[in-house]
Amino acid sequence: MKFFVVFAVIFVGVWLWRNNRKEMLQSRNDEMMQAKTRTAPKQQMVSCAHCGVHLPQSEALPSPDGLGGAPWFCSAEHRKLGALKS
Ligand SMILES: [Zn+2]
Image 1: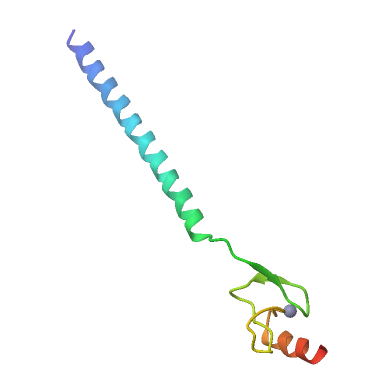
Image 2: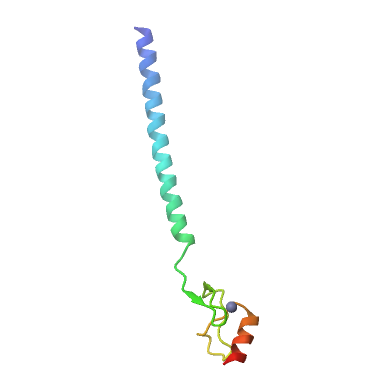
Protein backbone atom coordinates (compact mmCIF):
# COMPACT_ATOMS: atom_id res chain seq x y z
CA MET A 1 0.00 0.00 0.00
CA LYS A 2 2.88 2.32 0.84
CA PHE A 3 4.31 1.78 -2.65
CA PHE A 4 1.02 2.77 -4.26
CA VAL A 5 1.04 6.08 -2.39
CA VAL A 6 4.66 6.78 -3.41
CA PHE A 7 3.90 5.80 -7.00
CA ALA A 8 0.80 8.06 -7.06
CA VAL A 9 2.77 11.02 -5.67
CA ILE A 10 5.51 10.54 -8.28
CA PHE A 11 2.94 10.19 -11.04
CA VAL A 12 1.13 13.39 -10.01
CA GLY A 13 4.47 15.20 -9.68
CA VAL A 14 5.57 14.19 -13.17
CA TRP A 15 2.15 15.07 -14.58
CA LEU A 16 2.27 18.54 -13.01
CA TRP A 17 5.86 19.09 -14.19
CA ARG A 18 4.95 18.12 -17.75
CA ASN A 19 1.89 20.40 -17.72
CA ASN A 20 3.99 23.31 -16.46
CA ARG A 21 6.65 22.67 -19.07
CA LYS A 22 4.08 22.57 -21.86
CA GLU A 23 2.65 25.92 -20.75
CA MET A 24 6.12 27.40 -20.46
CA LEU A 25 7.07 26.26 -23.96
CA GLN A 26 3.78 27.57 -25.33
CA SER A 27 4.23 31.01 -23.75
CA ARG A 28 7.86 31.12 -24.91
CA ASN A 29 6.70 30.30 -28.44
CA ASP A 30 4.13 33.10 -28.29
CA GLU A 31 6.78 35.54 -27.09
CA MET A 32 9.12 34.52 -29.89
CA MET A 33 6.38 34.99 -32.48
CA GLN A 34 5.58 38.43 -31.06
CA ALA A 35 9.27 39.37 -31.05
CA LYS A 36 9.57 38.23 -34.63
CA THR A 37 6.69 40.40 -35.79
CA ARG A 38 7.97 43.28 -33.66
CA THR A 39 11.53 43.21 -35.03
CA ALA A 40 10.40 42.93 -38.63
CA PRO A 41 8.28 45.99 -39.29
CA LYS A 42 6.90 46.50 -42.77
CA GLN A 43 9.43 48.32 -44.87
CA GLN A 44 8.82 49.97 -48.16
CA MET A 45 11.07 48.44 -50.79
CA VAL A 46 12.42 50.63 -53.55
CA SER A 47 14.60 49.78 -56.54
CA CYS A 48 17.75 51.59 -57.55
CA ALA A 49 17.11 53.74 -60.62
CA HIS A 50 20.54 52.88 -61.97
CA CYS A 51 21.03 49.15 -61.43
CA GLY A 52 17.53 48.08 -60.39
CA VAL A 53 18.53 46.35 -57.14
CA HIS A 54 15.79 46.32 -54.50
CA LEU A 55 16.52 47.64 -51.02
CA PRO A 56 14.59 49.05 -48.05
CA GLN A 57 13.71 52.71 -48.47
CA SER A 58 15.47 53.47 -45.16
CA GLU A 59 18.77 52.33 -46.72
CA ALA A 60 18.22 53.90 -50.13
CA LEU A 61 19.60 57.27 -51.14
CA PRO A 62 17.04 59.76 -52.45
CA SER A 63 17.42 61.50 -55.80
CA PRO A 64 19.99 64.32 -55.91
CA ASP A 65 17.36 66.95 -56.76
CA GLY A 66 16.81 67.51 -53.04
CA LEU A 67 13.16 66.48 -53.02
CA GLY A 68 13.99 63.41 -50.91
CA GLY A 69 12.00 61.01 -53.01
CA ALA A 70 12.01 58.90 -56.14
CA PRO A 71 14.09 57.95 -57.96
CA TRP A 72 16.03 56.06 -55.31
CA PHE A 73 19.59 54.84 -55.55
CA CYS A 74 21.47 52.03 -53.81
CA SER A 75 24.75 53.92 -53.39
CA ALA A 76 26.29 57.37 -53.75
CA GLU A 77 28.07 56.18 -56.89
CA HIS A 78 24.85 55.10 -58.54
CA ARG A 79 23.20 58.33 -57.50
CA LYS A 80 25.98 60.23 -59.25
CA LEU A 81 25.71 58.04 -62.33
CA GLY A 82 21.91 58.34 -62.30
CA ALA A 83 22.16 62.12 -62.11
CA LEU A 84 24.54 62.19 -65.05
CA LYS A 85 22.24 59.97 -67.10
CA SER A 86 19.16 62.16 -66.74
ZN1 LIG B 1 22.29 50.78 -57.86
